Amino acid sequence: MSSMIPPVYDTPVFRMACQQFDLVADFLDIPVNARDRLKLPKRSVSVAMPVRRDDGSTTVFMGYRVQHHLTLGPTKGGVRFHPEVTLGEVAALAMWMSWKCALTGLPYGGAKGGVTCNPRELSTGELERVTRRYTQELIPFIGPQIDIPAPDMGTNEQTMAWMMDTYSLQSGHCVPAVVTGKPVSLGGSLGRREATGRGVAYLVSRAMDTIGIPANGATAVVQGYGNVGSIAASTMARQGIKIIAVSDAVGGLYNAKGIDLAKLDEHVAKTKSVVGFDGGEAITNEQLLLTPCDILVPAALERQITVENASKIQCRILAEGANGPTTPEADAIIAQRPEIFVIPDILCNAGGVIVSYFEWVQDLQSFFWDEGEVMSKLYRILEQSFMQTVNFAKKRKVSMRFAALSLGIQRVHEAKTIRGLFP
Ligand code: NAD
Image (cartoon, rainbow, N blue to C red; front, top):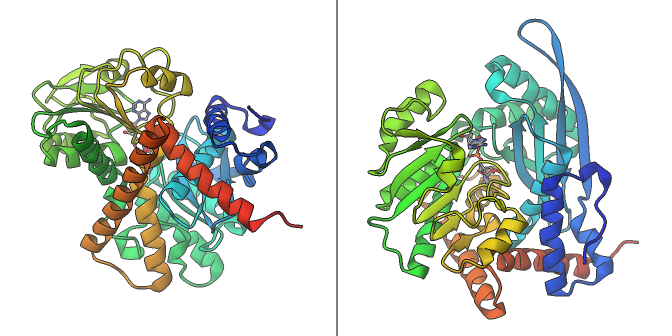
């Protein structure tokens, strides 16, 4: 049974997140009068931000922050800089963060933020001014015990450094715990930059064990060669997996013999794109998704695997590095293809928020861990979440996505029920 979608959030991505929630709520028999309370974002902020451009003109950018639920602790989630950012998209991503944090047992509600802009078309100075203005506008709504931003698409360690600096200047003292994904020199955690991609690769290896594919000779295709995609690719390559295709927003690259990632990284560092690298032939993103392989890793945008291509993808493992890369309609098609093992987004890319949690804990204690400690704690949580999801899926005869969402949603529902309703 579906319930209402407020018009401010009504976008295809938010509808998709609600559709997933409604199916799980029916399955878990969540009382109808508890559903909107669980589903609808608690708090959303929308800001118009005038920013001075390098040429002296002023552009007003739209910025958003959505905090999905405040039941289990502060909220946590990335900040996206992308031309297609909308309030509805940010709200959907915040909802998925809630289920992800609950699935992995982190003491957070989900949040997400974004600025509608194209970071590729902004100078470093303009990016800094957009980031500082966005942070300034959000000061009453963020903080180490309120809401802790982190990097997402189009943002990185530098963005977090500017956010932390802007917030600290306002506070009158240094507040490293206000954001995660910072440079290590500012109180960032060792392993945070690599955490999401390494987590994807770890879960891919667990999925390979589960369905019996040996790493040596296995092939992988990665859509989106950014933070998540590039680290997932290099970690899988170290496990003996051959990376035969990668792409970014500009285009893709294919090499049946395996792409030389070290050389590709040098090319990307120089040109900011995989396109034009001479170690493979050019392909489109559409062709990339249909390339036969053992492991397909979408690590770019939402809604890439759709009714159009779900019956045509040719992989054994679909490892969702991105958030929301598969539409519910595509999911129904993939459910009829038992040869494909899905590692759903809220599990597959959870490494990022898990190590963000470690960074927050280290900042609050001013006591820092070595990389080995960070990684072993990360893999322990991922292993536990993976096994709980696999066992739930087997026992209740549902898909891995349904199992992961059920575990996350059930935990938030329980917490809300136990806390009760005030007044
Ligand atoms: P990023 O900005 O570092 O990289 C994104 C990559 O995707 C870039 O190479 C970009 O060119 C490419 N891209 C954009 N549009 C594309 C398109 N239409 N087709 C193909 N490629 C395209 O971002 P990221 O941090 O790696 O995030 C990627 C995905 O992973 C997002 O869905 C994000 O929400 C998710 N995620 C990120 C983290 C994290 O820690 N960074 C954590 C969890 C989930």
